[in-house]
Image (cartoon, rainbow, N blue to C red):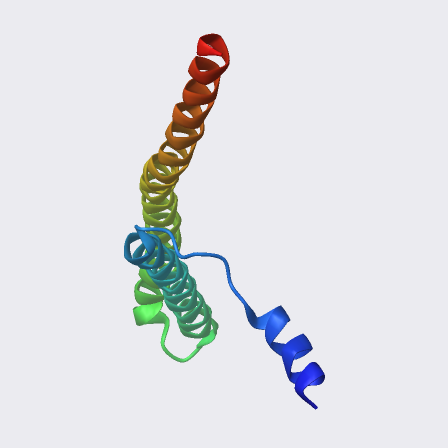
Length: 126
């Protein structure tokens, strides 16, 4: 029984958590919020599209066809604004993501370089 438990817990072990985990997780939450916002823009534009088409299909109310055309134009504007905002924020998040990961990687690389220098100095002295 103990061996089975040890095997199970061996797979549950995780790597050490980086120092800037909170910032990385905050970026991931922001990415997901950005995707949700894009989907809400798409949903709103689809509602406007359906509403505009429905108004244009009404034959008894010819004097409000202008409202259908306005809904179609606003639908396209919503879609363009949503995609523009999504791309803009994605680029900013990508830059922040690179900054955070470069900092953690550079610390590791710096530690490895320091240990290599120490080893080289010890070899030269010996």
